[in-house]
Length: 509
Image (cartoon, rainbow, N blue to C red):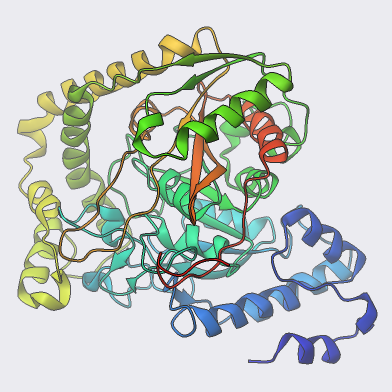
């Protein structure tokens, strides 16, 4: 591929006007595209170079599973449209990467990282992809993920798929990127992309955002269309943006919202993120202070900054998530996996024999180690065995109960406060293909089940490992949450470019 310098020389822009595209934020990129100091083609070429040098070579991050062969052609078209005064939206010409469970009607397969779907090309875009194209975004690549969005079997290691291999954390390469939107989180953290789309059922945006040190938004249930996304369960599945800055994530989310969702907000979310925070009171959960020595000081600083901004803070020592919530959530996910995944396989014309859950289970069994590698397919098998009609009453009961439990936990605090703030996840753990993931803790479940919006914000470090906090609000409170996140982003200044350390024994100095 052309080097960046060669590309600059070959373009019509004067060399002295050019801007270096490395580590850009969206505001700078927007202005550079507007004033001609950067083209969409140059920006796309920069990311293609980064991917070529560091995805499978260099740092071996394995964040990208497929690159769009038409990305540069599309970027040139976006530049031509801009030159003709026909920019389609504030997102025009900006590259976006998508998790590999999101359907695209182009040359990139839609696979969820699974061998059973290797090479599968869809004939239609997911609705959010059609929206991004209409907004003038350049679909750059698809990102690796925990296979089947981490709902294949127990004992998995986040960020691994049969097709994409093991995604690595750019801060410490020996450690987890968390999942299942691991590739999306790593792609923006490592400057493979300016913007990324992930999907979440429970923690799959929030965890990789926290552990890779970037912003991730899990929006209100129903605010982004799930059409075309390989599902786990429609009760909880939702796509959301991942980026290095709050404004950037909000800009991407604006282009993904359904028409109904846009009607809920008075202004674009990107504009709301730039407004003064209207929050008057928040609840800060201190129940995880003893899980890592860096968490208490991180929250002390956060509380100090909130008080300095004139925001009242109630600090709470407990976060009593009922065990029944996890149990009923799993019942819902397994039931809906059978219903929703098989519907997707039919709607998108997946060929036999892998056009049913049982067909996928049988395929994997037949391929053995090639498909199943170091852990099994218990979730696929459980879902394949579901009898939808017979188990419907139990599923409905579990759905109601899980939502009631999650909403009660959140509403206890959100009736008197605008947001709940709590640590998102503990620090990254070593990648282990024998034992699987070794979570310290995670706090995503209540917001995931209730369908309430949650934003992960970089907030500190434990040694070389990023730590994030989640800002959780009531449904459709994204504008207020984003303004609060922007305030804290400015005050905490916790974002840090990754050091690409090979392991924890190597000092960042």
